[in-house]
Image 1 (cartoon, rainbow over the protein chains, first blue to last red):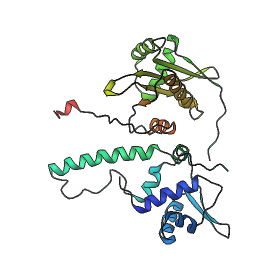
Image 2: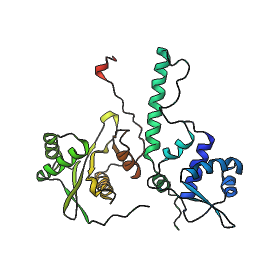
Image 3: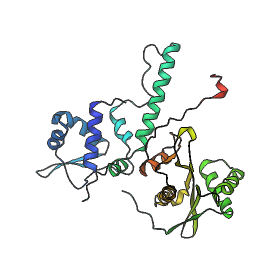
Image 4: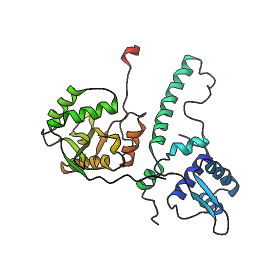
Length: 136
Length: 156
């Protein structure tokens, strides 16, 4: 499954912030750790903020923090903010033909498996299994 | 914010024929399909059977809370001996208290005692609740891919 850069940045940012909920991370700090520009990351963080997954605190000690529910938020909830919903993509050229329909059915099968995987993994599950939760 | 639920004291034990009604009723409540005769055959097959078969019941404060069924099988689909979990169900009103995790861990412990190092199960990929449960226990996609064929569609 090929995810857009923004999606991967969002997954990384959410997991980084959720692993230590007490700690705030500045956009510069997050952008540097990802090797991307602050501008690029800012767009992603705005989308995450609108979804209620992160919040920005102003001030010298400010920064982003995770505000979602790690037990309820799945990877798909984040992916869906940036990617086309599986199963809702527009028909592609050739899909009206028997060969195109056969290819489309295989791609749908792959999408369904990918979606089930992303929907079944919560932030908490991923952090715990990766043993990467920072205890405060 | 999550509201923590009141603590219950859970205990595990082997299933007995007297559990049939509770098991069958819970399964019917969850799946919407009554299959009492099938559960009766499963209890007699698993409970008190050979050491590689397990049928466990969990009780919360003495009240039936759920069950799990598993077995060690070897060389099916070419797979070396491994533990299979065929069913795990918890009363919806008693979920999120680690009862399912206790059953899962108890089955895994019994599989380990019998010398197997892998546990498998099969879930409907649209049943995100059970899929998430097994994921939270550390399970991941295995090396096998389950395939189906609709015989009514005349695909062969």
